[in-house]
Length: 181
Image (tube, rainbow, N blue to C red; front, side, top):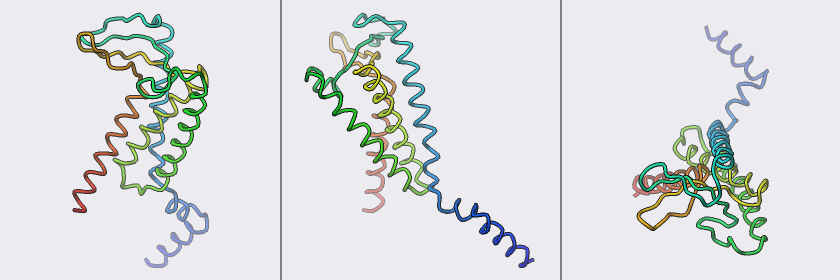
């Protein structure tokens, strides 16, 4: 019986498959979620570009419109009127943050699913908006939430993924503090 177990162990080691599988960071498997966010984001933006007229709201439900806008700035149109240089700044930030989060994801143990999902959502959202900045020079936003005359800044699927992922990271850190304290 022991002889068979030794042969199986040696066979895995000889092929390298068993050793490699043990070394591979398994949290990277959550990058499929990033890809899903990117695809959903880009598909909804294409629909918005085809179906909506810029700055003309289409009522969907109370306090919810679809309205096509183009954001050349960051969150809440920060630096939106800066003259064009901000595009390249936000492209560099998106690439740097996505790369850093991908490295973090690669180093996570497989059991850190909650953190891995959060990071994958943020990476997907960042890349979704990065694609817009590269292709159009601005991010396509189309979700308009409001109360009476007060409108939240328009946003998109990528922004939702980034916010949900960031919220999950905050919850995860609070949960870790509670366990440590």
